[in-house]
Length: 268
Image 1 (cartoon, rainbow, N blue to C red):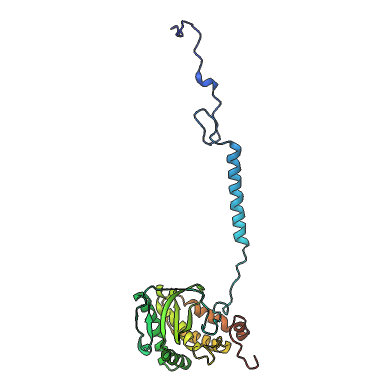
Image 2: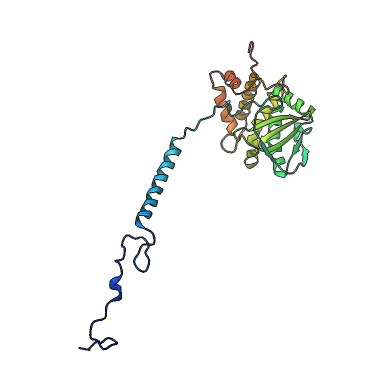
């Protein structure tokens, strides 16, 4: 058997340098070459526990949030003396290019970029077709007033996203606005909203006072009829669902007065 000697001639066996290292950890956490943990185990376990607790708290908080459902009347809040329906702040197209409206609305200017004008034109053309039937006399009267007031029509992104349309009285001019969502779907879905605004314009005390609750209710009924007559490529617009809900209210006038419409009931 070969004689293993040390460099100094000793025959004592060489010590294994690994015998002095601590045992390797076998819990799956990273270690240094010496076997020492990169992080203290208690620290890692504490972080894991905190992560689990944070996730549980987040899930609990989201599940416990009471998401208040707005009523149909609250989704079409009265604007004020110079605004038919409140839409909050609005983001408008950078360009102010304009072109004449279609059909019955050639006296109206469509303002905005090419996409905005195209959407407004389709929505307005649908309203002209409904007015031509003779079944929407108040909308026809509103159209006459709109044209006489050097009317404009434009697409805007509303702060109150549930609002589909609004009309503003600015510098002796009536500006009808449609929610920008109609630019990204078949714009005929915006036609009932146009009918709604045209009827609001006929309120005898607006601009000057908020739209009357009875005027809004009649406009909602006409909007509902427009929704019934039009054929939509997909689901009806949210406004159509809203007017159904509003008209089904036990006291729709009272609900409208609560959200800011002028109480124009007899004795109101």
